[in-house]
Structures are given as C-alpha cells and as structure tokens.
Image (cartoon, rainbow over all chains, first blue to last red; front, side, top):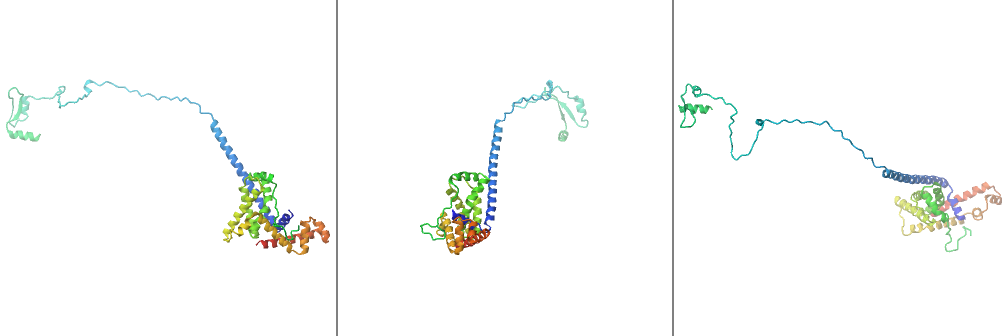
Length: 149
Length: 195
C-alpha cells in the first residue's frame, strides 16, 4: 500500500494531475450522456406504451344514421302510337311486295297518253283479256325513248 | 522490508494494488453503467491510476501513449460498462480495452511487436505491476543515501514532514521541495527503465 502511494505520487509529478482532472470531467460528461440516453429510451418506451394504450382504449365510433335526401323525380310521359305509325316487320322466305292503295296516284286517260307523243306513231292495244299496253309503232322511237330513260 | 533492498522471495516485487471492496463493485458498476455521475467518478478514481500504471508499463514508459490509452480505456470502459460482480472482472475488462488500444496504436505507427514473446509478457496483468515495482526498487537503490533515507522515512516509516524537518534542521517547506525533487528524479528514472 505504501509502495502504491509512493508510485502514485511519483507518477503524479508533472502535469499528470491536470490530465487526470480533465479526464475525470470527460468521464462525468460521458456518464451524463449515458443517463440522458438511458432516460430517453425509457421515455420513448413510455410514450409508445401510452399511445398504444390510448389507441386500444379509445371508444369505437358511434353508429351514425345517414339520411339520404332524395333528388327530384323525373316524370316520363308516353303516348300510344297510331296504327299507321307502327312499322311492323316479319321475316319471310320470299320477298313480298305489297301495293299501297291508300295513296292516290294521278292517272291520265288513253287519249291524253297518246297526245303526249304527237309527232310519233303510237298505239294502245290489248290481247285477249290482258290490260291495254302502250307501244310505239316505229321501233326507232321505242329505242330512243327507252334509251333516254 | 525496505523496497530498496533486494528481494529474496520467489516473487519479490509482487505488491498487491487493491481495488474497491468486492461487495461495492456491483453497486458501483451498476450505478456507473446507468449514468450516475457520482458512481462514474468513483469508478474513475478506483481504476484510473491503476490503468495508467498498466498502460505505462505496456507502452514502454511512453507517457503520452500511456495517457492516450488511459483516456480510451476509461471512456470506452464506462460507455460499454455492464454491472460486474468483482474487481477482477472489471480489471480484466479494462485491461482488455487497454491492450486493444495499444495494439491499435502499434498498427497505426507500424511498430513491429513480437506477439508471442514481448507482448504476452507485458500483457500479463500482474506482470505490469511487478515490472513497475521492480523499476521503482531499482531506482530507489540508485538514489543517493540521503535521498533514499528521506523517501523511506516519509513513505515507509510514516514520519511527517515536520518531524523530518526537525531531524534535518530545515523547514517543512524545504522537506516538501526536496521530496518533490526526488520524486521527479525517480519518475524520470522509472520511465527510462521501462523504455
């Protein structure tokens, strides 16, 4: 023990005491830093626990009755079509042509027809009970009028 | 037994450097590990000088290097300290850090060291104190007779500076100055021997 004291006194000669004191201050600063870090860790943990608890214990949201405001209704009015306005179709294997007798087609008499071609030889004739047919006497006229159509 | 006398036993220079009492170690290390400033200061007071002696031996008496090692060891030791049950555990832990610090230094300066011989010897914890005590003994033996007498009277015979002043018929202040001069002389001689 006495040797230790002597050795320590010998080694403490010079500026060792200043070095030692400076190092002691650094050690205490390190201790403070450790304590701060230690405390911070616990505080962070406590904060996490508090947040978790508050989330866990918070009451569930109350049921809210939602009333939907109805929009103004749109009223549609319909009217029935007349018979003649309805176009009906049906499938058929053969093409059918129907004559519409409802339309009045203008017609001319036999003489009026013949007067339409005053400078050409024309005629109306029928064979047996067949309806009358109009024809040009001169085949050139027939060809000319037919080609013009 | 006077330290200046040559030792006769098998391990003449092994002088124990006691640390804090064992039961207090756990509380001390636990407090320091938790960041208690008082415990940290107590931890520092208990181990700083011991580590310095160890570092001085390891660093071939290079005081600047020894101080750097002590700083690193004490700061790292506190930073990573865990509660420990015995002084031996703490001392083993601190000397491990000091050795690592020393090896880092050797790598930095590219100093070639004989890991199998030189360092193994120097790394022995007990050997560090033994080496220092042996150097002290040798240096004491090399002192002038009156210088050795005043040192032995003050440190080993527990005579006060006042008593020594009366014996030498000088003032206590002169005794104090003389003791300081002899200590400085011993210090320089010890560091030379460690180199």
